[in-house]
Image 1 (cartoon, one colour):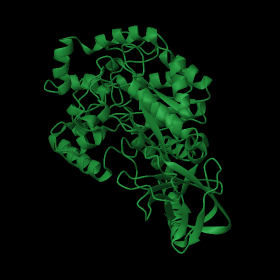
Image 2 (tube, rainbow, N blue to C red; image 1 turned 45 degrees about the vertical axis):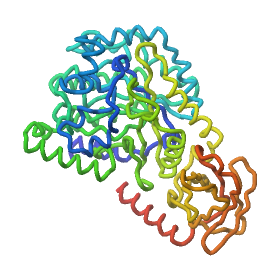
Image 3 (tube, rainbow, N blue to C red; image 1 turned 30 degrees about the vertical axis):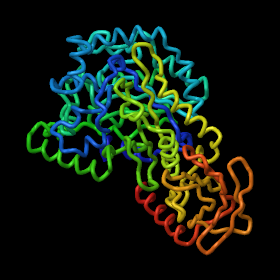
Image 4 (tube, rainbow, N blue to C red; image 1 turned 60 degrees about the vertical axis):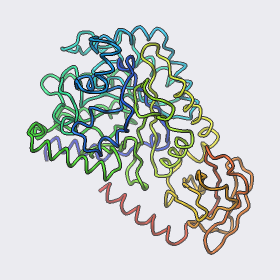
Length: 506
């Protein structure tokens, strides 16, 4: 057996550490020179674009951090905006404004805001696709001199985050670096064909090793793909795990292959574009392809429908972008109800949520609409921590009750937590029928704060009297079921899921 296959086998024997599966909530930070112009079209979400039949859907990408790529399309919305607002100013000059804005940056304030949400980890973008580095790297960019911050943003952020007891992770765009490849990325075929080769793979590996050695990130979050072959990638990941034994990586480390060169041919391009569109329609959005090895999956702006046999993390911004976008209005942002219920849904299905913050580039401040959503999270997560953090999925994630209420289930020990959401069109019901459960001799039902709730065991399941407890439409109600068991049909569901999990591990 080859050394590469031995390395892959050793990697696959790893278990995802409990801290990550217990964490449930993380904060993503996209902050680049593109945060200065801070513009992207808001007409469609990423999932809608990928499912569309547009010739170059990514030309219209709602991600402001893709500003440099969007500029490469002369007829794009970003190019039109840039000409009106900045004339012929080159993208690289925005780095000067970004550097000046660092004078107003307070990493301790950011860390405190993130801590108040109940988040357990923070992932900072160290280098996005424009190639600009947020640390004074020793690995010189051969195409853009001093294309990095003079201030050690990564180091200061790591210190502030860890000082408050949170884990610190780093994002690195391994698959794209637009300072090495100027190919405009408009389709999923372009994604594969524009992964830089030549000097870039060695450059990217040197920088990732530098980040590991300097900052020991608990999360190493790569994007797009990896520019080297598997033979070179597996030793890099082994080095990471030796350096950070409790570290985790995401699922975007697909190693480069000579087959990728075929994506430049028209017939292959057409096949990739068609297949990727169909896959996006099937998935309902962007779910990356599985590489040979990963610790957890990262669907983007889309949630899995069921409990997953592998760890996973929903990745999303507060609006349609990750980087700050001045074009976003209130209606483009997630509402309080949507945010809190989506987080509940993710946790009930065994996932984490990595919610993004996109600070302004010119003054290093977090915009008010984003701060407001961090506050919403904290007011819900912290009081209900017992039902959310350190939990595992129950037999099924939940669904719709006979009364038309949405419910999600989590469990810890012998307790089952029921998160309840009132639909907009429904009146607050005084009864909640939980068809999935039946009582035991010692069953009790109470609010998360400990107050008892009346209930009865019926042939249709547990019926809980929630009275007028569900008057609040914006925030889920949480009740605790002590000492209950699944009805027979649900028991069969969990057995099937356990079989599936064993097959995935095999």
